[in-house]
Image (cartoon, rainbow, N blue to C red):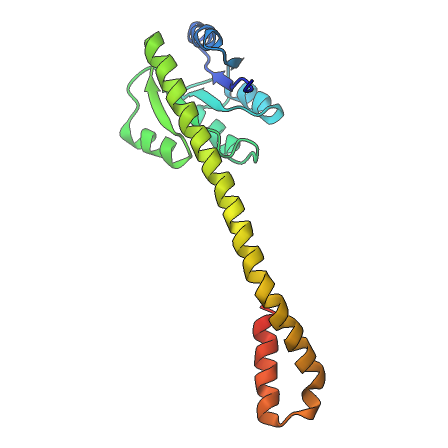
Length: 185
């Protein structure tokens, strides 16, 4: 059975946090709650989350300050962060949130069915992105391996020629030096 997805909800409005948590728990997600920016970061440091719902305006540290710290945490670097706002946020602030790594902005209040659908969609996208990153890492390691294999033969021959270059003509010594320096880049 697949492991339950973990969601962190950070919002200083208890009614919103409790409502979101109860809806998401019924959808079979594991949910943690934080009521200010510092508490959010404290919980984020000690656990891996699959999604973070983050209020823009919170006490102690706002959502923009929180996301800056979240994106510095290696275990949460790729975790989708959704900004929550209860009123019109200026386009400049919205753009700032996206530039800091926010995945979306959701306006509160949000209908229960819409919350469920949006969370499922974001988690599916996050899972697809994770699989893509893993495939990319495998591909890159294969390319590095495949490039090293023929190069190791060239490096070996270059080292052999380097040891024997006092027997060569000056023009050939230049070529051996060029091969050696190119092979060791």
